[in-house]
Structure formats: structure tokens, C-alpha cells
Length: 125
Image 1: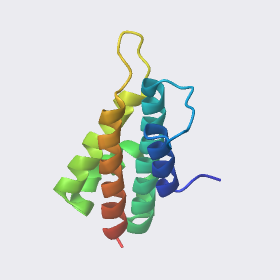
Image 2 (image 1 turned 45 degrees about the vertical axis):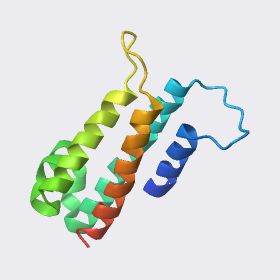
Image 3 (image 1 turned 180 degrees about the vertical axis):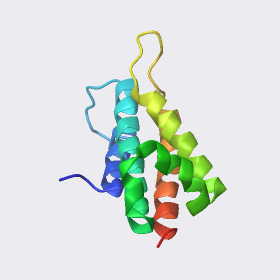
């Protein structure tokens, strides 16, 4: 059983901004990377749900669903999905020669994913 996109976004928000008084043993960069993974999963699930409503056969091929999104959801939504997914994907990958993502950067992506969840839920209905 998988968590809903909204639950994943909530979990990512808790990683980025722990409750006051919470003891965090993970450094901020690691929490930001984990939040990026959760946010990318939420965006993937929202896209799957969108395509399930619009045309179920599109959920089988990940690359095509992003390319065709422009014709179904509009240019702006497609561009936002592509750039957000790409940025989150880059933040998810560990590279020894790069610093981890900054929590502020991922927090901005959290706001964008939250907005995209709303847009994808409203379009294609």
C-alpha cells in the first residue's frame, strides 16, 4: 500500500521543518535529499492519477506521459512538471563531488509540488 501524494508532501514538509523541540539526528542536507525523494514520489503519483483519469494507457510509459502532458494539461503545467521533476531528480541523486541540496531549495520545490498537485487534480477531471 502506498501513501497518497498529499501524505508524501506532508512527510517531506516535516523533514524540512521539524517541529520545535524535535531532536533531529540527520543533518539538514540529508533531510533535504530525503524530502526531495518524497516530493518526486508525490509528483509521480499525481501524474499517474492524472493520466489514469485522462487516458489510462499513458500511465505505462513514464517518458511519454511527460512529453504529452503539454497537449492535455497545457504548456505552463507541463513546463512546471518537467522542471520540478528534473530538479527533484537531480537532488535525489548522491554524488560524492557535490554538496547535498539546501533545505531552502527543496522547500521551494515543496511549494511547487503542492501547487502542481492542485492543478493536476483540477485538470483532466
